[in-house]
Amino acid sequence: MKFVRSFPRRGTRLGHRRSNLAAGLAGAVLVAACVTAAAEGSESAYVNGPADGGKTVTAHLYAQVAPLDPPGALGHITSLEGPAFGPDGELYMVHSTAPADQPKVIALDLQTRKVRGIHKDATSLYASLQFSPADGKIYLTDLNGKIDRMNPDGTGYTTVASGSVLGRQLVPDDIAFDQNGTMFVTDFQGTPWKPTGRVIRFDPDGKHPTVLLDGLAGANGISFDPEYSALWVSEFRAGRVDYLPLSADHTNPAGGFSAPSVGMYGNEGVGGLDSNAVDASGNIYQCAFGDGKVYVYSPHGALLATVVVPQTMPAPQLLTTNLVIKPGTRDGYPVVGGDNGGFVYTFRALGLGNAQSNGGGTGA
Image 1 (spheres, rainbow, N blue to C red):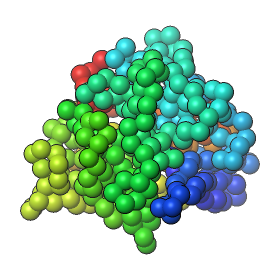
Image 2 (cartoon, rainbow, N blue to C red; image 1 turned 180 degrees about the vertical axis):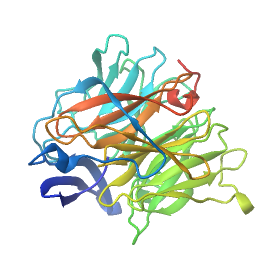
Image 3 (cartoon, helix red, strand yellow; image 1 turned 120 degrees about the vertical axis):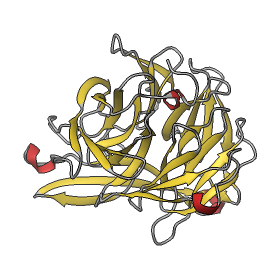
Image 4 (tube, rainbow, N blue to C red; image 1 turned 60 degrees about the horizontal axis):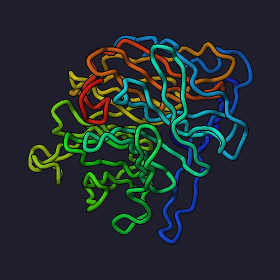
């Protein structure tokens, strides 16, 4: 979820804004949240359009999980993030823009389509949620500069990493786990002209951070390939997805001919490449924030499909921030925010969901 900009679109006013917070003495910029302004005019003014390549897959509305949040410093919008399947089979996610008296972490029962609250707080700006295979707990990245942990029922809340990490304020955006619970976190900083974003590895307990990749422009989405041998990392402000092969012990980038490289480029204009997911066939599902789309790439960079969120609501619903594919099925679930509230959509994925949909553990 991500940035601060305003732009016209065919005579209609549609803005996206990202609020910046000071990061203490480190002087880093904390990018707060994504927002959109309500559109004026006809629906056609903000339709996100057909796919530019591959086939078009239409997502279908599954459930509304959050109302339109009250107007605030970030605008009059709702933003969701970080869907992941819990050990009980429910779909957990964060309601990033929830007011202080409403849950920031929620769970959706896919059978009843009912939502229950897990955790409330007044200050967090959560950008992702995952379950660790090491302890089965929820891990949350907070753009205010910390990584939190809690039990699936919301108890046992604690912070495992915060503040300055390796000489620079941490702005954690997304998180991926390997099979042992080692954490790989994107540090959402930098621009193409001053690339300071990072990919940071933490031990399962949040200790001993090491930088695996530096010089990124808004490091954002991060997902393992099916073999847990490499990471796909999106750069929100550079419009590209990087391929980061790892050493056998996951402590360093691979070297030689397997050194990190650029995998795919996107043409997002005023939008950006947000979070991503990978299916069991190795296909990469890359969310396009601000366009209501998810691009599906093969590991070789071919655009296989574009998942489109139909713009049928009174106002724009374009904040496609993240998604998950239910393990063992082709049921994809993107979370979509915007000017109407927070919604979960569904679509048929090209490949099966794998263990990453549960944070690297066994599928539910």
